[in-house]
Amino acid sequence: MILIVDDSPENIISLKKVLEKNNFEVDTASSGEEALKKVLKNSYVLIILDVQMPGMDGFEVAETISGYSKAKETAIIFLSAATPNINLITRGYSSGALDYISKPVDMNILLLKVKTFYRIYEQSRALNEMQTKLLKEIEYRKEAEKKKDEFISIASHELKTPMTSVKGYLQLLERSINKGETENIKTRIHKVQNQVEKLNLLIADLLDISKIESGKLMFNMKYFECSSLINHLLEVMQQANPQINFVVENKVNQEIYGDEMRIEQVLVNFITNAIKYSPGTHEIHITSEIRDHQLYCSVRDFGIGMSEEHQKKIFDKFYRVEESSERFQGLGIGLYICREIIERHNGTIGVKSILDQGSEFYFTIPVNPVNIEQN
Figure 1 (tube, one colour):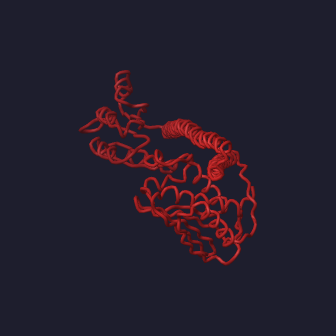
Figure 2 (cartoon, helix red, strand yellow; figure 1 turned 30 degrees about the vertical axis):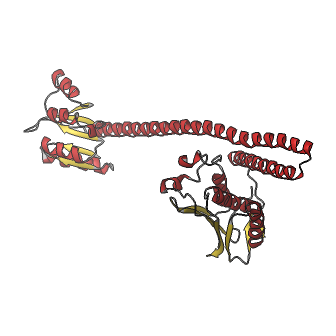
Figure 3 (cartoon, one colour; figure 1 turned 120 degrees about the vertical axis):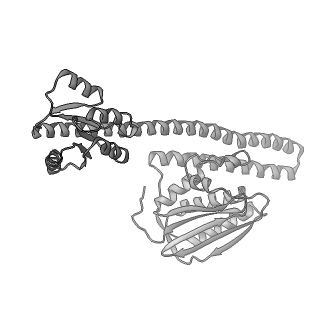
């Protein structure tokens, strides 16, 4: 917007008419005092300022405006009926003006100057926006680098832990074999298998994250029996966790379109997390039903829960709740992979949680195919 400041109504009307005819938004002030009030309230790209005015002259107005942080980027063109001389021009520039035009004003020259200042303003604004964007990207690169380093450190630790356990159990197993301790052999083989399974899951997650980054996470989309998937999954989970009472509410009696293996992967992650983050409790609720042509599945625990702040970030890559990272193992990528899987099914994923009262993780996907990516 352009502000015209002149004590002559005729000058204001003629300038305003020409500028508005050329699609410029114009505001006016008939005195220096009025101009200063308007500059404090509004933002102007350019001020066309008459020098000879009663009260505050144009030089005084310009000097005052130059002290306003809000008007730091505002250009000023002086208009003067007096014959220009070196002293007037010097004072004009030292007051903060960028140009000086004598009256009577040649409208073609004024328009040329106004268009030039607008072009400079637009270019300056574009450069500032680009600089701001680049600074944000640099900060994001720095943050990503920090997260990557943290992830490598965590991954190394998480992989080392089961490997160390496997090595220790194998040494104990060798002693038991030498002594012929049948029961100990069975127990230690089972423990080795558990640690190997942990390694398999960690490696699978690392491979999946790599495939997601390269856009190569594959999906085998077809209709499958959701009830059968849940029943089979819970049978396996119950054997591995006999202390847990799984309370199941399964109302799905139709086939669902999707990648059965990937949906099972999401549910396994939900249930595994529910067990992990609810130590001392022995009940987990699993619900599946059809809502508005969408499959709705949820897993609810009665464990440590989380704050609203953590709920907003829990599906982000490499995110781990700091308060629980010391107590519970994990790479911080499982839920991120789940989010990618559900979003690739054109579904939604989320969590409801209350600190110290438990969490309910859920997802929805369309029952029938809706523009789902195949690879």
